Length: 130
Image (cartoon, rainbow, N blue to C red; front, side):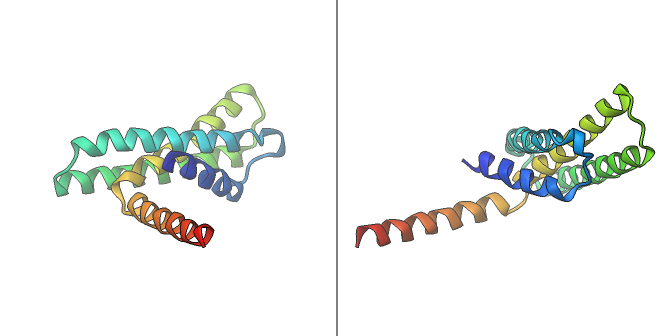
């Protein structure tokens, strides 16, 4: 359920990125990238428990995410419309969101969302039961 929620959030966040009108399907790549990155991050987070390794993994994820966002912006600024540029744009866009999703399990965000959703379900159950 959280994976889908992060995918929807990424889809909304992707509207903040400048995407050419003819490539609006890139927004789906963002949602898919975050969902796959979140699942991969969950697998890796089970093996990386000690503090220094977690910090290193988190910092490398942030670095990669920022690098791919910057590379996407630079490639978009070049304005080339050939096939290889389009493929590069889609890969950079997907990888930026993949690394964003990858770093999520190393933060408190999933735990806080679980707590928030359980409280919302509990209140909804009380309200519908009355």
